[in-house]
Image (cartoon, rainbow, N blue to C red; front, side, top):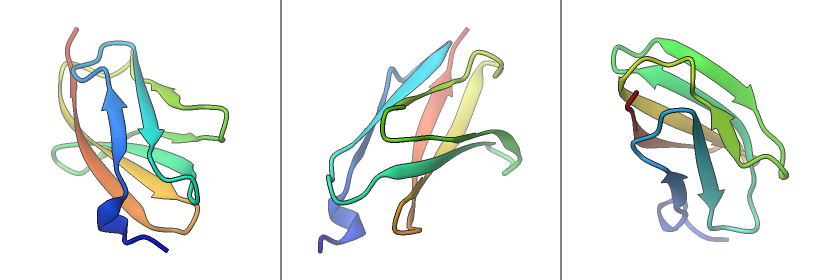
Length: 86
């Protein structure tokens, strides 16, 4: 089993405007839920995702910086920075 520190999630495009794609580089885990927070820690959008879905719609978000949080199938959580630019 790999350490979580060895696992990377690619988030692109970043900056984004309509959709954000994500790829997990570890085959033993999957992303089950994505939560986007503003910089004050307020949840601005949530999505349950499946193996087939590797993107979320961010078109309703205003321009700015956000934290995108990925819940993995082993209940670990990973966070990445994301910029929305309209």
